[in-house]
Image (cartoon, rainbow, N blue to C red; front, side):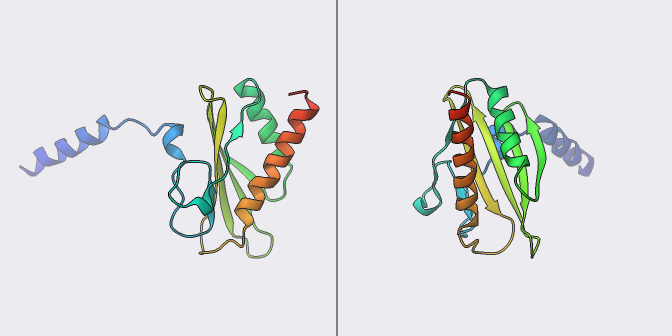
Length: 145
């Protein structure tokens, strides 16, 4: 009987589909140290999504270039429609996760910036996304988009 239970569990696990990029970006937790463009009940965490710059490859390239020029950043994961970066604070070495999900059908990219630890971020995540957005829009205007 125990062996049958093990086979059922293994079979169930094998049937689970891998997580798509659309499922990688999660909603913000209850703590006030996260901002996201995904739908949320908490309006204080809501930020606007970014507009895609023409094709997906160009958009990813521009975004990666901007973020990798920022201090203490690291690209963690990249797929066709997803980018995940970490930002590490200078003094206390706190790590924040910044994720982008690209949706060509909607011509936008969702974004989430969240602290891994603590309760408050003193507005760091919202300010970071505002700066990335400013640099992104500036780069697009230089490219004539």
